[in-house]
Image (cartoon, rainbow, N blue to C red; front, top):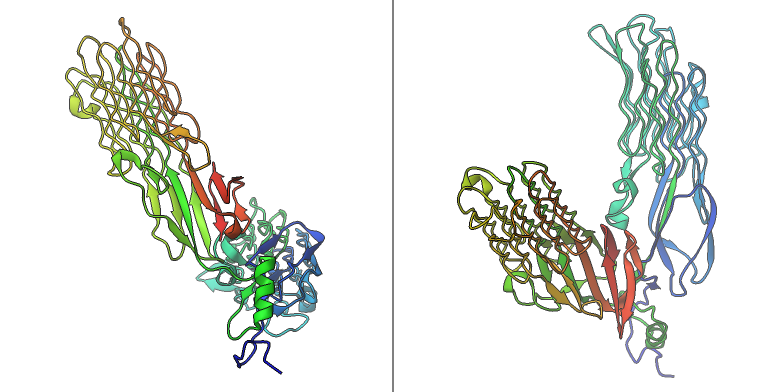
Length: 590
C-alpha cells in the first residue's frame, strides 16, 4: 500500500495549529478557555494569589508554575481559576493567598506573614516572612514550594537574627525567583528583610504582559518606630514594601501574585494584602519535521496551518506641535504637524511611499501613538508633539517625529524661531522677521516666517504636504496636510496650525486637514485629535492651541490577521484586507 505521506518517510512530529493565540486571565474566580480546533500544545504561566503581610512580617509571593509545551486537545474546554490575594493583619498572622489553576496544573497561594509563631503557618507557594517580636531568638520563615512540585513554584521566607531583643526586625516573604531577605543589623540599626524577587515569564509569551511579565515577588518586612530601624522593600514582581509607623505596609500589586508588605509599628498600622494572581495561556503553532500531506491539506482548508511572514502597510503620524502663546499685543507662530510616514502612498515632506513591513506570526509589535504638544501660555513657546512608533523584533522601527512648537513673540528674532520637528513650527512675530522651524526629511515641511510686515503676525506651522505660510497682514496659513486611503476611504491628516494675528485689522491664519486656526486677539484653536495637526498660534494674551494627537494605521490581508491586539484599535475590513486604526498606544500580535 502506498504511503499516505506521498512516499516521504521520517519521524512524525507533534503538530499544533493554535495561531499563537494568547489568553491572559486576570479576573479572580473561575472561567473556561476553549482551545481552537487545531491546538494541540500550549505554553502556560499560572500565578497564585500572594500572601498577606502579618505583624511586620512580609507575605510570600504566590506559587508560579510555567511550561513551554503542554499537551491539550483541540476545541476542548479547560477550566481556569485565578486566586485572590490573602488579607493582611496589623497585629496577627497574614492570610494565605488563594490557589490559581489551569487544567490539571495548580499553583499554591503565598504564605502569610508569620506573627512570631510556628513557621508552618506561613508555608505556601513561596513562604511568608517572620518577626522577632521582642526576642533575640533566630527566626525562620515559612517554607516555599508547598505542596512540593517540580520545577519548584517558589522559595522560603527569610530568617536570621539580630543583637538583643527587638520589636523592630522582620524578614521578607519569599518570591518565585529568590528567598525572602533575612533580618540583619547595620551598626545600631535593625534592618528588616526585603521581599524575594519574582520571575520574568515574558520569554515564553513576549512583551506587552501586565507588570511587564514579572510576577510573584515577596513582601518586605515591616519595622517598629520604637527602635532605630528600616523596613524592607518589596520584591520585583509585585511585592509590597514593609511599613513603619505612620506608613502602612504596601499591598502586593494586583494580578502579579505579589506578597503584601508587613505591618508597621508603633502603634500598629496596617499590613498589605497580597496581590491577586494571573493565568496566561498561549496556544502554539508547531509544525516542524515531516507531516502527513492529508493532514496538512485539511489544516490549510480549516485555516489552522501555521502561516508564514506577511506584508503589512502602515501610516504613522506623530502628535502635532502646540501653538505659541500670545504676548505684547503680537501674534505667535503655530505648531507644526506631526511627522507623516506612509507605505501605501506619499509620505510627508515630499517623500515617496516607504516599503511595507514584514510581520512574523507570533511576534508582538508595539504601537506608540504620540500626544499633541501643549499650547504655550503668555508669553511662552508651545511644546513639541510626541513621537509615534511601530517597533518589534525583526523589523526596522518606524518612528514619526513630533511636530515642532510654535514660537511666541519676543523682542529678539533668535528667540522667536519656530521649533523643528516632523513638520516645523511657525516663527513668532518680533521686531524683525523670525524663521520657522525645520521639518524632517520625508516626514514634513518647514514652518512659516513670523513678521512685522503690516501687522505683528506669526508664521503658520508646516504640514505634511506643504510649508507653513508667512505672517503678513494676516497670520500665516497652516501648511497643507496629505490625504491617504489606507483605510479604504480618503482622509486628510497632518495639516499645520495657523499663525496668529495681533490686535490690528487682519485675521488669524487658516488651517486644514487637522490643523488648528490661529487666533485674532484670541487663543489659538486646537489641532484635531488623531490627525497630528498643529495647534494654532495665539495673539495678545491668549494660549496657543494644543497639537492634535497622532495615529497609527496597519493594513494586512484578512487571512493573516490574528485578532490579538491591545489598546482597543478600531478594526474594519476593505475588500480582502483588515485595517487596524490605533488612536491610542497598544500592540498587535501577528
